[in-house]
Amino acid sequence: MARRDADRRAPRTSQRQQANLSSDTQTAQAALTFADLGLSPKVLSAVADAGYTQPTPIQAGAIPHALQGKDVLGIAQTGTGKTASFVLPMLTRLETGRARARMPRTLILEPTRELAAQVEENFVKYGKNHKLNIALLIGGVSFDEQDKKLERGADVLIATPGRLLDHRERGKLLLNGVDILVIDEADRMLDMGFIPDIERICEMIPFTRQTLFFSATMPPEITKLTEKFLQAPVRVEVARAASTATTVTQRLVKSGSKPWEKRDILRKLIKQEEETLKNAIIFCNRKVDVSELFRSLARHEFNAGALHGDMDQRARMTMLSNFRDGKLKLLVASDVAARGLDIPDVSHVFNYDVPIHSEDYVHRIGRTGRAGRLGKAFTIATRNDAKYIDAIEKLIGQCVEWLDGDLSTVEESAEDEAPRRGKGSSRRDGRKSESRERKPRGGRHHEAASDSARADAQDQPAQKNVPQAANTDRKPRNWANEDSRPARDHRRRYDDDDGDTPVGFGEDIPAFMLIEAKV
Image (cartoon, rainbow, N blue to C red; front, side):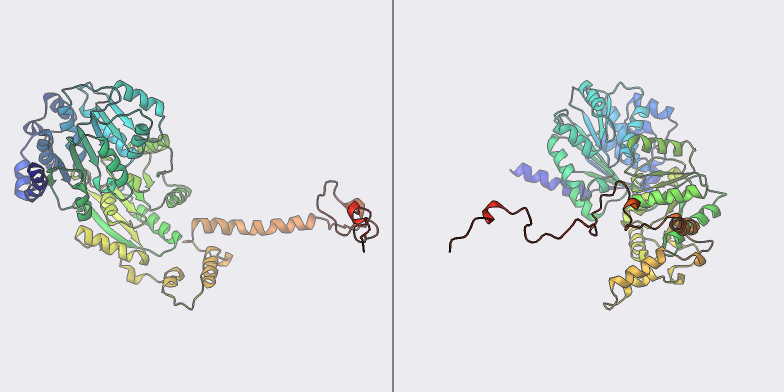
């Protein structure tokens, strides 16, 4: 019992001695090479073939501890090589041993299908000198193909929580042989929606496992949750949590709250940055906005594609592949593309919507300015986004400059004034004003009008004439004339003359009603 209490106190002691890398330590690690980290010759050969010679600070700080079998909590900016921080030591440790059927040796949990597929690509690239079986369990793919890989035995199992639990419930997967557990993008994986799944999975894995957490943001409340899964962790933090890269130029752009105003601002920004814009990711908060904005850009002849969670897996992977290969210049996406996707040379990021969660802002703009490259991030903001902007600036610890004046110069619209009305204003008034805004009159259209509104305005005269033309050709029906009625008319004619109106039951009097009553 005393030993168990001592083990419980051990994590607190180790957390006080966290491996927070100062600027002096980072300078000393600049001269390190991958050979100094203790990796195997096979891994070093694959890293050299990939063109890498010196590790990044997060790699230099996390790999030695991971090779020793310690739990690691790694925090670093996006684009700093966190994926290689657990892939390389895992490959070195997997050189000994053999996988058994339906019992993977290692498990990597990812929040999205794209991240899981990307990690698989890293294992294929760095593990080309190893004969390892890699299984990828994600949604949108047939269960049969995944079952065949599990039956052969998986040295590395990369999965999203939902599909992993599906295989487990079907009896096709056993997790009692997992030696290393990796939870990538830990802040998103430990979000309230993922906590039950993570806890269930951790209960299926041996308590003696090694656990590695990696993320770009780690709020204090999320750090407390990691204590449930980590034992005496080494915290490797190469930058302040939730900080943004200095290579990214950030700007806020004011806009009105109407959709057509934001679309117009976005198109002007794209044309303004045309000389330096190689490719760009445009982030929206909702899937429906992704589709609408994509159609709007396509109508204006922009080379754009769309990516969101409701698309099937093949379409999502094809869209990402086309964007990486340069076939698409603009990618309109939801936050499914904000976490960990390695698209190395993205020149611009446009936040069409200000993210509701401030942590998502760090991940979004982290898609540009990766690996020391320069990048630009523009965020379109309305008056309703003021509180979200304050939260973002508080999180990243700096104020983001405005491109052309702040929100104080934006004129208030009826939508902005609606929340400020008193109790005397009724919902009916709000609906009337909303309907008036959504159905503009033909004389009020101008060049900056909404795409959908302009299309409706062009089609409106034709639609008005259609019923008039139909009415002029249609002859009035004379139901008094029996011959003018349609042959198949199932409506009841209440004016038909069927004879005298019956009195009482008429001729259909029941028999019991004819029995004389006894007085």
